[in-house]
Length: 399
Image (cartoon, rainbow, N blue to C red):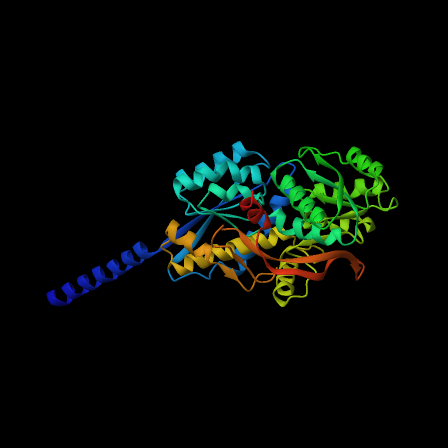
């Protein structure tokens, strides 16, 4: 009896030790997700949120045994660098996150850049597109886009069709970069830029700017804005001032005719030409499956915009980094992994990260707004390039 009791007790301790061992071995990886849930940019923030939640629902279990992810969400309230810096600091110091991601706005990304460097916490941009922000931020990478990737080749394309252009961009870093890229491409092709306007980011009124453009009588208007409701407002001002009837063609980056906003723009958007890395109307198998999953989750009448795709891809990269390290993530190993990251399953098509700049290498498509099945869609009519690096960084090297 004594021997049997002793064996039973020892067996119990063994089971207990195994149980404790499994607890010790379990890894929880914390991801800090910062988006804009309030303020004028809530629509853009909602796009990021939808992409993250859809990815987590469909892929949340694709982790090594014993590893789980904890997503900690914060609101930066829109283009508000002070708030972004504060919530990022809380996520790093108090919540001890191992990854940061999200951000609609470039000014917010610039505000948190020093924090990511000091704390060695990798940040993956889901949207913020200001290219120069990452120059001195070694723990930042991006899976979204830069403005030169679309604006520069669009300028080259436009110069073959039009002689005189006018540019209208939102007045912050990405807008300035879009303006720079288009003008360089357009002028290199022999085009003349009649003028440029920069529209205030807060509470923009596009009407007076559209009137100025109409009076200048360009052949083509190049536009950029931070998508969402600003895109619809810009399009409506273009229509209200009768620029289409005045013969002014509207072109721009993909932000001006985002998939989720198109139906609210009306037929004035027909024929608008853009260069961009994503369209919900693409017939790529990965995209068709993605759009179907999105519609099933959020509604048959809704289309995912490019921000949803970037949120999906950022989470895919983070999960891959976690799997690569068996759940025991190290910031330097994570950054080395991201530098070599390649995706062949993204809805946008195959893309990768430039190991030298940590910036995204995107496919870029020439698109035109057409009506298909009674709905406005961005139809991809030509592939500009399957692996377009950021041309701005090459231009900066030559300065």
